[in-house]
Length: 153
Image (cartoon, rainbow, N blue to C red):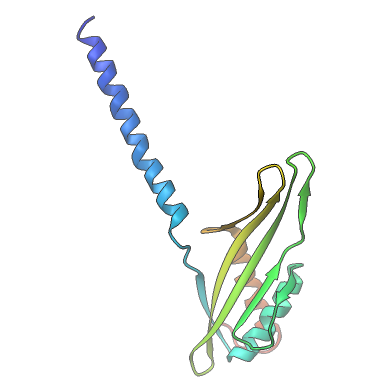
């Protein structure tokens, strides 16, 4: 019985330490910048920019920052309010356009979830590393480009 107790103690310490490694990964992920998802499309910057605006409208996003220059675009989803949780949530998408070669434009996409909660002290914005919206948006953008006569990717 005496040899069994140190074995349990050692096992529990090893179990706790293994959890610390996973925890440090979560903490590190929280404080490292989230890289954008990038995809290239056939078309010049202005063509892809115009199609990007139409793709947002198809997905029921409102344009919030389209300064006129076709180098960046921002849009947001509807505000979802939860009475039970006492908060409001909104998805915000930022796009940046870069011409990588003649007739080919690269689109960088960042997605964040913005939460407003009076009980917890206000507003937070959490960048999303993975979200189904990345694939959905890029697919919709490609469809708009194809419908407008821009060749496929």
